[in-house]
Length: 305
Image 1 (cartoon, rainbow, N blue to C red):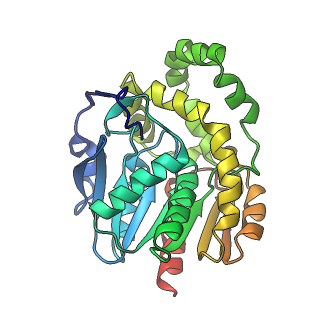
Image 2 (spheres, rainbow, N blue to C red):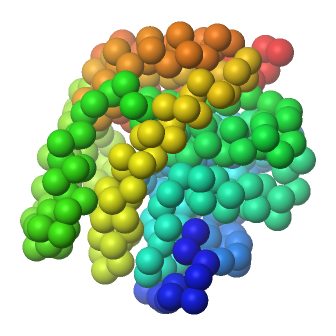
């Protein structure tokens, strides 16, 4: 997290998440703010062993709307909007280096009194989950009991490699800024590509993902992620090998167009104590495209020890 004197905090300028219609349909799920380097919004539900949910690039806690209640039946679930996303505070010069972000999430775990936890991350949040778990293993072995990675970003899926290299340049950044309004209008197309079957996109999904994009600094966050992308991939290549015997569940959709499903088999080789569940006909967002199957897969894994 950017913690130097050049950091500038910005008002969120977004209505509180508990005013959203989808939140009102989740009894027992409460919204909170954690004020650290930035104000981070998080949802909490249930009781039992802590389960930390880490969303993807431009997702936020909305991504878990079909999972919070089912998972809260056997866990105390925490679902933050990672800084720069959702309803958390926007910060100029946000450091999106995965090591820095993992250190921030470790402080969050401390603040929430998670002496032990299970960690679940998807896509870029999966990469963060890997770095957080490795950090915990270095500082307090055994603090992360189980790791669940849902189509996580990894060096063996080369999708988007050329785009991120171009977008990280000065010219590429300028092009992103000019094209961002058009990209928001194309959000339905992008979302459709995240599903194995776009017919499964439920009402309100498009609106839920689009709302936080209206904050002007969301683009700055995305640009920061792009600029740190290849440095983070190099770190991940080492991190996956250093997880050792961590008990891990890999969940993938075989129609994933964002993080190629074939990379799951490379990860399984590098994680000797891992189990792979490949969901047929499902894309990059299995937790919302096939929530019943996803929730049951997670429940079985976490309660079968």
